[in-house]
Amino acid sequence: MEKKYKLVAKVPKTPKSAYDHGRFISSLIEHQIKHFHEIEKSLLAGQGLTDITKIKTELQASEYLKKMTALLHPQGAEKPRRVPPPRKPRKRPKAAKSKGKGKTKSKRGKRKSR
Image 1 (cartoon, rainbow, N blue to C red):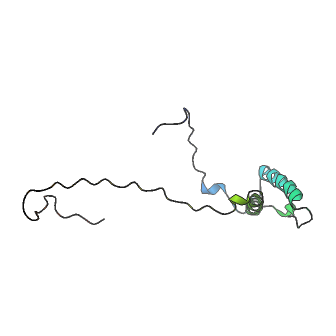
Image 2 (cartoon, rainbow, N blue to C red):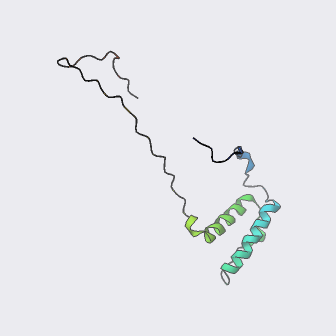
């Protein structure tokens, strides 16, 4: 398989300890919430807006950001189903034609079940 790019950086997986439901939000997430709230004001003018002053934990922030992302990108609101990649058909060796009469025993023995 050919590489498309000359330099590809490997990114390690995020550890499970990186996300904590009860942890207070960082300033980065707080600013992201404020930006989304400004968008919410313009989109949902006159409707019930979310009180962002009550968003204190990562769980509350993730729920709000998920709601706003679904509002902005309705085509992505539904989770796409993961389709497994198609399996390649196995190539079986062709059986040799025997000139003798009847069936003969295979030299390999019985095939084991998988």
